[in-house]
Amino acid sequence: MDHPNDPTTDHDERARERRQLLALLAPLLTLAPRDVLAQDAAGVQPRAYRVALENEKLRVLEFQSRPGLGVCGEGMHSHPPHLTVVLTPAKVRVKQPDGKVFEAENKAGDVFWSEAETHEVENITGRNMRALIIELKNKA
Image (tube, rainbow, N blue to C red; front, side, top):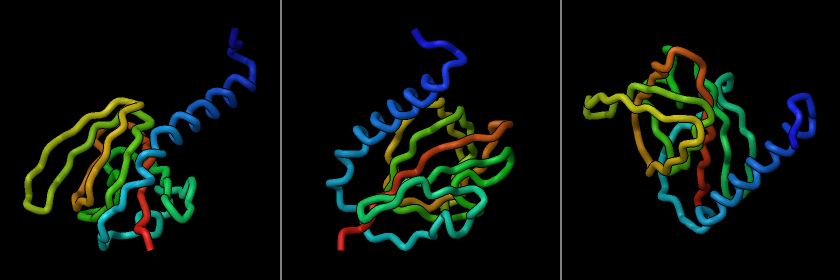
């Protein structure tokens, strides 16, 4: 039985979450992403992004956004194909290059794939939000 004050419980839970994420990512490593001229999110917003893992096959970015700010980049920006793992509840307003605007809502634990895209996304959750963005690297 887990005890709330047992420090090993947190460690075991994080290890389990890492194993689940790696199991989820394994099939994606065989996909070859399209060549896309996208901004380097971690370079453009170093205070919002942390490179959690990077190797020759993928890059995992941990993203944090405050209310009213851009969610995954500032202003209109682009991403290569990527997998998003939502870590906290999120409500966002998305503006597409053609001017179309819509709102989307996700709960913690939601996982979704996005092809290469260009958009502007604003955090309208009313609180800080976090997500992991997993980008596949181009094969040489």
